[in-house]
Length: 470
Ligand code: FAD
Ligand code: MLT
Ligand code: ZN
Image 1 (cartoon, rainbow, N blue to C red):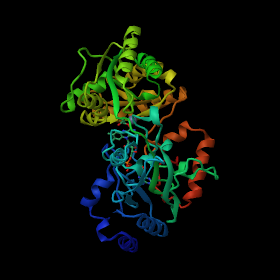
Image 2: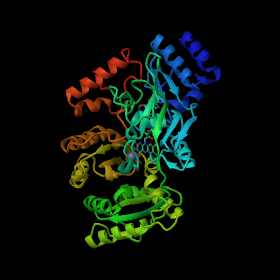
Image 3: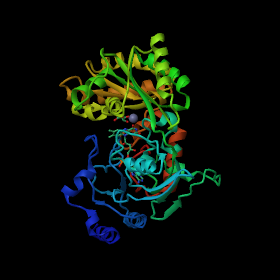
Image 4: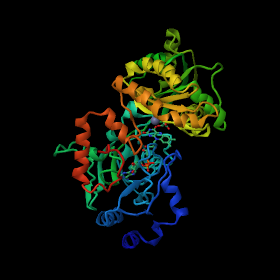
């Protein structure tokens, strides 16, 4: 171990190898506070060559490596297990924007660049990097790629894997794969870039990426809409698609329980509507400077929805400040759920046609398992993705923890019965790797193990994450 620490210090400099408990603390517990482990050391390389030297030293001493970006992941994949044997490799010092090419529509960045800084660099060049998450002020592009993150713009622009053209990756043996080609067309064999996207640090360390840029969308028309049910929200989605066309960029849902928490705990949050509703939708159209009719289109589609009974009321943002107030009602939910006590997160996708029946059936089913449990349901309904999160019955956090296995099984079984997915956008991490085996076919699990074995035969890259244990 002394030998390893010496090699790490030589590779990155003494100041960037952390071993004191106070220095390491922030790297071994995740954003939720639920996933916590121990580390042999935290290493903070400043370049691709330094990452390669760290990974090589770990490979030669058979030391597990846990790559970490902004540590905002929600499934325990970015923090080590309790053994204390792993090195946490933080990309936090690799923050350079390497190149922006507005005409080619590309931006090339270090993996440790914070998502909001990628967005800002694109904006400075008069372009849009569309990925948008509530965690964008902290999460890194390397983490976004490693988790194939989704967020609130997937409806229009797709998941992270649709926004990347090439990667630079340090492989588990310390070699560097330079795949930073910005080519739209490159059919020269297996798509290695896509193999690393969504691999959650189990196949290598992403150190750089070339990403796609889009035309800027400075015009927005945004509404907060009361809808009577999930079924009504799905009908409204159809209306919004028909009227909004390519401009429809956001279609998010939240139940009243979620909004009650935001109104109670988020400073400055105000309900923009006079009457409470069981469900709400945040809908946004976005366009270029010449797209002048977005407000009219939004009003027309909402008018049609009210006539059809799929919407009961709506507040339309009249200024950028009002727009951000409406957005904060949706984006504030994750944060306030933590304030309210113990939570259980489920990030599921269902076929859109099944969302209404599935949600109707799930409420009563969960009350049978734990009477008083509070579903805080929200998410990216335009993608069929619900965050079917649960809060404990008031003042009974221990009861939620005791019933967690049964509650999760009830939800996942119902998701599987509807041919959905038990992880829509957050990944499997350490918390869902075992569950994935139960809901995937044997063939799929075998293929996952074969890929892992081929790239990381010693099993040192983020062990315990993603790949179901044998
Ligand atoms: P980390 O948490 O540090 O790591 C996540 C995983 O990626 C780990 O397995 C880690 O080992 C691996 N990893 C990190 N960097 C690298 C790298 N350079 N190379 C290889 N592996 C790496 N997610 C969504 O998809 N949609 C949302 O809408 C969304 N909203 C969120 C809102 C809030 C308030 C919070 C706290 C989280 C939210 N998330 C969301 C989850 C999270 O922000 C994403 O998963 C994000 O992509 C993680 O990025 P990170 O840099 O924080 O990664
Ligand atoms: C979000 O969309 O806000 C997050 O992905 C959900 C969560 O924090 O559970
Ligand atoms: Zn989400």
